[in-house]
Image (cartoon, rainbow, N blue to C red; front, top):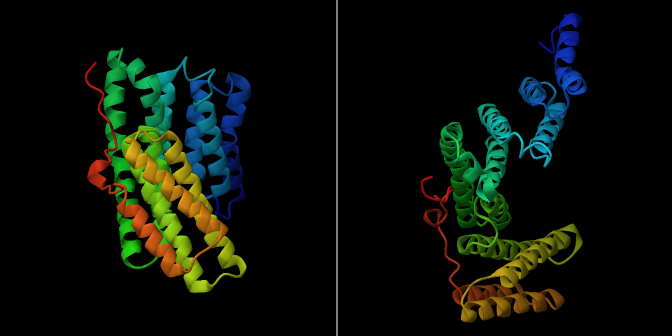
Length: 291
């Protein structure tokens, strides 16, 4: 309809996309009908006005998480956020769908699950939403994990790190930063980034933008490992080895060794801690019992 030669249709479409703004002026930006109109406009604009659709989705997300709104209307906010994720999924953007639903999972984990469980309607909604989170976020997690494995086997270590970064960014809102399995996922990401930096340096030398890219990857690896060390609830012996590994990486950044020496050091570091993790260790939803 947007590309029709009929100019009246283009005007009608523009008017339709302006409905949320008009409803916001009349009812208020946080009114359920305004939020629903914004959701509908987002879906209509996705293919033809992509930039505006992204702006609408961002605005909708911010309004749904407004601290002056969500506590008063948790069921309406959760349902609209659920629909936003499902629309993304239906439009073929599975990654954005997973991001929306992972954020919803975090809200549930941080208290809304208990709140909804107090009402019969809430229990029904909660059961449905958790199943959708499990299905859609779980699908994307598996795709990213397999993508990382395939990239690693193919020697594309930067691609492997990219897959693991997305995996980690989806996993944290599901479980929180301080769970043991989250720390293992983070450690795998840190090692993937470090090795990707080593590979990039070995393939392109130590000059120009490639050197900067490699350094950024290894700096990110160090930052992640610092976070693991500072928040780790591991046994003292494991934590000490993590600290030693962190110190080794920091020293290598100050005085980079040969590629071979760096790889040997990383392999030695990995063998000293149990960083092994598989999809079986990474449930999408942690069950919290019946209400």
